[in-house]
Image 1 (cartoon, helix red, strand yellow):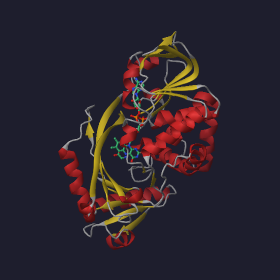
Image 2 (image 1 turned 60 degrees about the vertical axis):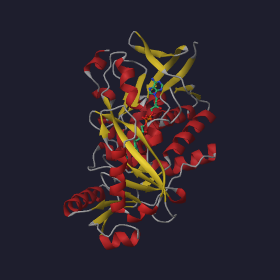
Image 3 (image 1 turned 45 degrees about the horizontal axis):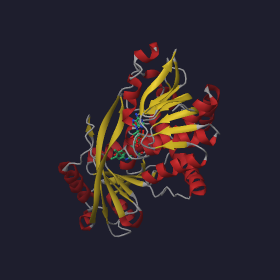
Length: 392
Ligand code: FAD
Ligand code: GLY
């Protein structure tokens, strides 16, 4: 089989779907190659938090990229709803980042000061104030950092809506279509070898989550990525038990529609083994009950796991792969791929379809709104890949 696309996107997770949605919206001929089901890997496992503040312990490039991406959700939710009829479950009730001892309180207060200085809302609540907001919370808390701007979505629905939107805009979505290797001729990517033979394109975007490194290593480019397994479970509680997401570094509880609570997540680096362990779930259950005692009465639903794609420095790789004309990467979104999906789609589309001048203009616009807001672009460049890539 030999076909010509403008762009082939490898990987049909939330990142690949978001990129395809934006590229197809510009009228490009796009094919997404997904070796399994669309959104079936890390994306399916995600709790859907938009933790632009909760997940960041500093106000560096990832924070800047995250808050830009978070700001894109309301319009994206509306746009996808109108186009596809699929709701992404955007909830903007905020999040309580809990502290159980004085050290945690000091750390969160310091973080709040940084985030407020950067223009975000972050309010310290003592235990009584936190319980007033969420009456089912444990009384054993020290207090909580209230982050009203951190929302959440239904992650699988977001991926489904982006995929459906991309298809409605003309993109071809191929499930059970594995990219075996990248096809490169004289330093230029010309397509992808699939199970059905070669497929040609002007440009290729590697958006295959933690597996992106394997694709690039096939052409001698180094993309350091490692899996960090996360296990979660869900229960059905009485609707209204919890309105806001509860967050601690080792356990979070995300209230979904109809009283469903998603509890996550373990952090197990280095393994591609997706089996769910009793110890992992038992640990989460214990912590969840300490934070929200009434969760013990809830009805069990299910448990699952997924592999977070972790880069060497915790920042995603976004942009052109040096040494290979026409090849781009969007991978390594680690704990925040749902949050970062809208910005990743817009940014890759600007680079791939618009070119460097349009991308620079986009960054300049961000900078005009908030100095430092475009700092992530340099930090996330694929330029920091291994030396082999630069040599081509
Ligand atoms: P994936 O979703 O893994 O998609 C990559 C796709 O590429 C896969 O479908 C795979 O089959 C396909 N693929 C691989 N190789 C090939 C090939 N050779 N050919 C074709 N296709 C290929 N993020 C948040 O923002 N908020 C959260 O609350 C949150 N919670 C999480 C909870 C857990 C337990 C986990 C595990 C992750 C969580 N994340 C969260 C992180 C988020 O899920 C990931 O960062 C995000 O899903 C990464 O998306 P992706 O598209 O890069 O990867
Ligand atoms: N962002 C939540 C997680 O990765 O578990």
